[in-house]
Length: 152
Image: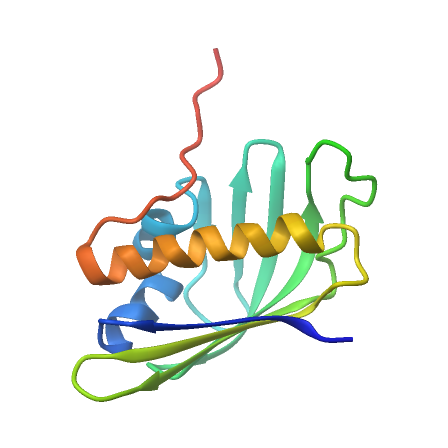
């Protein structure tokens, strides 16, 4: 069972990418504006996309090299999706490796997000979209996060 993996070369130093992955401001600028972000191992990160949400515990923070979260709660609201909690028990690992100049290789592995689970396609598309937003954010200062719409 192969987990979802994505490698992206970013024109930004590892320190900037690490900050985007580990701070409230960073997460809100590339992933979703509806989030609460803990900053130390053992704390939680909660992200929301309307009625969809995920709660992750911070498992590892290795400055400028690795960020790891384990998903403890999840509810995916997607038309046609019958299993809404498939992220629970999965682990998200970001590895950062400096390259020449100011280039950094970001390697994402979402352990447990496999082709055997129902949300694989939609969740893979989501990772591709939001990691593109992260790349834009760290390279230009402008990402494309999900923006929570106020209730009417």
